[in-house]
Structures are given as structure tokens and as C-alpha cells.
Image 1: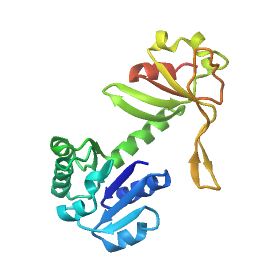
Image 2: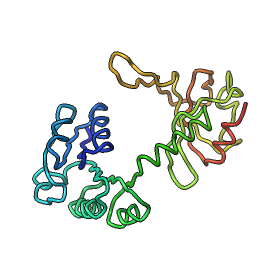
Image 3: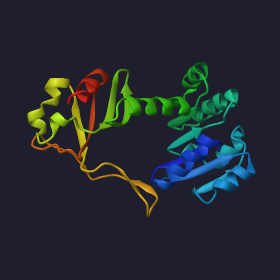
Image 4: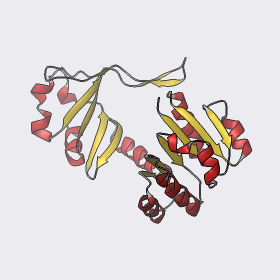
Length: 228
């Protein structure tokens, strides 16, 4: 089981902590606001009132033993930089920090943050993409100009095998997996339920209800998406 520590329980931090816990991770939630800690204590593994700038308090929580530590301190730019620097020093391998500006992000990367996020901006980009490309379900940037995307197949693919489609030769795209059903909301568990995931070979036949998980250059993904 992967272990996460979430430092800062504002909107982003609290939602992240709850989501990680719901997905089965061990989660430590930390904030200096007692009410914020009380609000989340029943949703995570452990919730503690502490100042994230207090190095001794973090070490007492064995912060260096966590697989990933996330830092979300709102407008406290200097504090988040100092905490990221300390986490790097004590050997935390994955350090995710919420940034509020490009300069802030650059400073965080310089002191050792492994992932810097702009939640509002990133979500806006995802929503814009989903509005502009209705058959695109989700995407993950991999490198500059390349992504892994989850998308509905164009109608040209229906009834054809992957070998017949020749996506690698035509578009330079690699099909990593296929979902046999689209993700759906389970009203009983109140969680998103994924369809069956298959790693296909060349004989796998694409049907209308399938969802493709593919990797490749963004420009080639866009060309493939526009097939009718």
C-alpha cells in the first residue's frame, strides 16, 4: 500500500487526501488549523494538527518514510518552498507541490519538487479539451508534445482488428490497453467504476462500446481523433 502525507488541508489538499484514501492509500493529513483536521479525521488514516514548517514535528511523524508528500499551502509561497527543500533534504522521493505562479513553480523545481501542479489551470485545460473534443475522455501529458489519452474510437475503427487498423504505421500510435466498457458511477459505493481492462494483441477487434488507451504525439492523436 502506498503511503501519502498531505500537508495543508485547504480545498485542494483536503480533496486530494480524501480521494487518495478512498482509492485505498494510507494517508496522513496535516494542518495547523484544528477544525480542518477535525473535518477530515474520519476520512483518512491519520490526521494531525501541526505546523508544516516545524521540522521536528514533521520528523516526529516519520515524514521521510512516506512514498509521496504533497504540499498545498495556498498563498504561502516562501513556506512551500522551504518545506519542499526540507523534504528533499530528508530523502522524500516524490514531492508534489501546488504552485500559484510560474515563478513559484520554477523555484519549487529548483529546490527539489518532483511535480508542481496548478489545479485550477490544469482542470480548466481538461474541461476545455473535453468540450472541444467530445470523444476524448482523459489525457496524461508524458513529455513535451506526447500524451497518453483515453478516448472513444472513431467510427472507422468499428469492427476492425488492431492489425487491420495499423495505427502504429499510419499514425505512430501505440494502443496500451482497451476498456470494454466506459467508466460509470456506482450509486451503491458512490465511486467511479471502471470497465474491464484488456491488453490487446493484433487480433483484438474494436467495437463501438470500447475505450482506447493510446500513447503518441499529440498531433498524431489529433489526426486519429478526427477520423470518421
